[in-house]
Length: 301
Length: 278
Image (cartoon, rainbow over all chains, first blue to last red; front, side, top):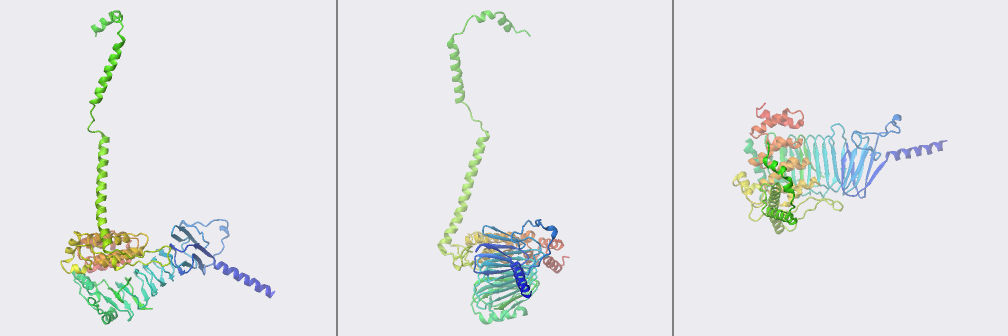
């Protein structure tokens, strides 16, 4: 009796795990994956298939009345994956749309590394975290409330967040341009100190922080022009080293010794916040990190 | 009314009908008729106001003017292309590869930034600005060919990749060209690009010349038509301090509009309060 019970239990466990690991695959190793979902974990791998699955999906109670009937959705999408997703391939585009407004569980997608990713979620009610990891091609994100995490992606990247924060960690080899902008959320970047980049950091009402190891050199002439522009229209003060960016200016002053390069801090106007534009390690890929109302952090990886 | 001739003919019908005309008379008459018709044809005049003629003339005129216009445009572009090839034979632009393993890199080497012979050198705008000021610079550049490589404009219009467009905007910034044409192209990106990051980058470039009349007019126009809240926010911050009645009116409109993004509204209110406009 005990043996039978164990066998039954094992079979039951297998069946549940099989249900939990329900997958949907699309054979595609290139192109653009357009995600119009609440959130997702997207991971790059060396393969030729895009694999979708839902983790920790809630088991919905069986509706006896719905038996034999087909679920309808005002979105116009039909669940052709069994995961509550509508996946369609149109040439080089792989379009993924959520059939229901709120996804249950976490959508995990494994994609060949060279597939481009485009994520859009403008929903004000339904959003979850977006994690993009180990991707080697273009990434485009437009999110309203999603928290965004980027790990070991090589770029290029265009990331826009309204209320959510963006945490990004770059590899040694990044391809520009990379633009990460949030209105209300913080922007936290960690990258190798050796990265050669043209960098722009900005915030209107937040603060800028950078690790001491980053030597950011701001072009003096550019700063002067900026200052002239500001003076011309607002009669606001010229160069002003402020405490907020002291670290950055000190670092640059000690390390950069070009004829035309000198460190300065820009101050556009009373309400225009902080803006720093310069080069790291002599310049290279274009990096833009901005947050209007929150802080921008640049840390060493 | 009695017609005497008719009456006479009727009374003497028999006298008139007793003789048959000779057979050749009819033939003669017919031949004469033909001759007269041919003569008529020969002297037939063409009416001056026939529609078809005018249609044809209009079509020819349009065709000629179209060919002329295209030819002039091609010549200008052709010249520019020629210069690009002469001075920068190697344009190392790694565009996104759909199938390749290398992924995508949207970097543009220094070699493809080309200077038009005889035009303003491709130094950052600041160098020129230090002389006669922005207006002078614009005037100079307007009278000479554009110094931004055509390739950048092509990439600026690449609808398939936002990163390519963003790279193009940043590369245009590096050329330092602030000619009217370049500003117009950037303004188009600012107003119509599908990606906010690209729009903001374009705004960043135009915003550097906010003291210039033409650039600021483009920005003010954009403030009125801009629909992207993130760009609106930057525009308001950039233009808010300008002493311009139009800008003030737009700020009031934005602050009053319930649909305006909250951050934009806050910014507009702050600026208006600072100006004592509300």
